[in-house]
Image (cartoon, rainbow, N blue to C red; front, side, top):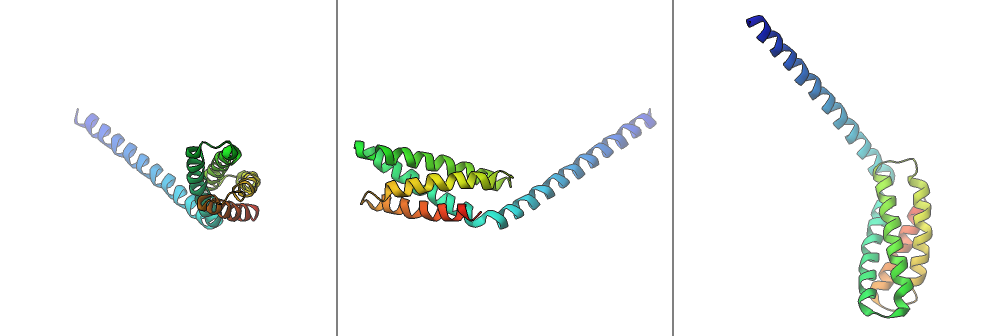
Length: 141
């Protein structure tokens, strides 16, 4: 009986040790992946995140105005948020398709900036500037 208990204890110890080693290996890969992503995509991620913030703010402001002149601006801001969010996600994952998504993002940002520039509100001007910066960094990817 003692031998059986000792054998089960050893098996349990080996199982716990194996599980712990596997976890640390996965953690090490995650850390390495994060470092690569930060170095490679840092400027573009920051530009996309600033663009997302400006577009959300502008879209909300324009929606409150209930003016049909702003419909295209609202639509493009929403598209810009969607594209920038997708690009950021792929860059953070270090995806091989991140560069292609950044080019799509740049096109939408260019259109959004052109539309926002048509209006004199400070939020629209800031959105246009942030979209242009995002467009530039995405094209450089």
